[in-house]
Image (tube, rainbow, N blue to C red; front, top):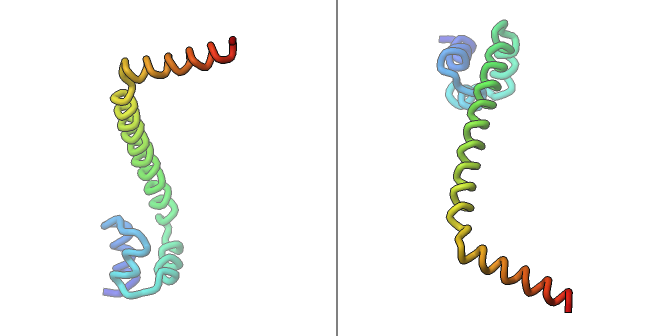
Amino acid sequence: MDWRERARQLFFDEKKNINQIAAETGISRQSVSGYLKTLPKYEEEKEARKSENRLRRKEYKREKNRQYREEYRNRVTAETMRREHDIAVMLLSHEKY
């Protein structure tokens, strides 16, 4: 099989990126990229991958925010709130007198 046909198959069918295709075929990244850019469906595939990545990134950020909120929720207790209140009272009374 010609490397061009193999690169096309890996990119469109197996959804591999240019680095993976170059490693598998033994052809330089520049050559693989240049060839793929000449194919008619390349831009369409590129946009589809970008939108998938955006969705994945959005879900990742959502999950990270959940984890951060969970950590914060576990750190705030009645004791920590009382300590913050006491510190605030000391600062305010010091400013007054």
